[in-house]
Amino acid sequence: MTAADLAAVMAIERQNPGPWNTSQLADELGQSLSWQWIARSSDSERVLGYIIGRTVADEAEILRLAVDAKHRRCGVAQHLLQHTFTELRRNGTLTCFLELRVGNIGARRLYEKNGFQSIGIRYNYYQSPDEDAFVMTKSLQE
Ligand SMILES: CC(C)(COP(=O)(O)OP(=O)(O)OC[C@H]1O[C@@H](n2cnc3c(N)ncnc32)[C@H](O)[C@@H]1OP(=O)(O)O)[C@@H](O)C(=O)NCCC(=O)NCCS
Image (cartoon, rainbow, N blue to C red; front, side, top):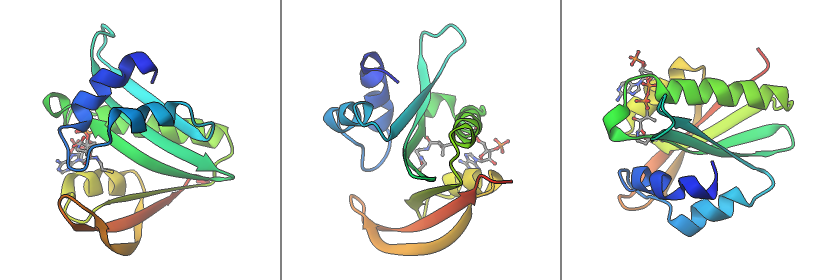
């Protein structure tokens, strides 16, 4: 992800509850511990989805993962996750964490399919709308 992608990423962010704003996304690009990857259409014209996270020591956290509503259920998120796991392993990351809304059944299925397990609940973690979060983790050592 580069600054040139921010408008397209923001358009996808706005499709979902609790979107980040442009300056939050831009700040992330400048963070040394942060990583971001974009999935593009085969002609490279369109941003289909993206993933943003951070790694501290040997632990990574996925902060954002979203796919344009017009391009869901085509394997874009699966592809982004597989790429992320490959890169994190290459950098020696041992564990990956994330939070998601308890009502986000589609994302939960996606993460479970990719080896994440729920390890707890953070009550009232999200606003607009208020909702609890599942905390999920996956070992990258297998
Ligand atoms: C969750 C999200 C990222 C999935 O992206 P996607 O590109 O549609 O997902 P994929 O096509 O790669 O799906 C891979 C697998 O995940 C599961 N899955 C994905 N979306 C699902 C849904 N809505 N319902 C049930 N299972 C789902 C399925 O097992 C799917 O495999 P299948 O299509 O062969 O059945 C997308 O729906 C999205 O952007 N949602 C809004 C933002 C969000 O919720 N982000 C995650 C919060 S941390």
